[in-house]
Each structure stands twice: as C-alpha cells, then as structure tokens.
Image (cartoon, rainbow, N blue to C red; front, side, top):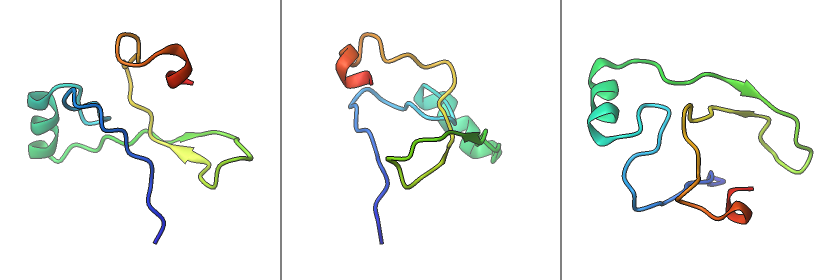
Length: 68
C-alpha cells in the first residue's frame, strides 16, 4: 500500500472540510461533502486529480520555496 502525502503543520486544521477545528467538526457532523475534484497534469506525479483546500494561502506558514 502506498501512502499519500500529508502535511503536519501543528497549526490546527487545514482541510477542505474547514480551516478551524469548529468549522472542521461541524462539516464532519453534518456529513457535508467537501471534495471538489480538480484535474491537473503533472507527468512527475502518479496522481492526476486533487481536492484543493479553498481559501488557504501558505503565507506566514511556509517559505516561498517550501510552498512550491
């Protein structure tokens, strides 16, 4: 089994289901779908679809190099 990529930020929740613990929890309780499929073409990647986290910018969390 291949493992996926996970970012451990230590900053709380950064997810398609919400950006704060209360927002995330309410999304889970309501069983709201959060996936908005986004196709991309990157020959270096095995995956060619992603569910982007909307309204999140890495500024203040990652350096520009890390954010690439």
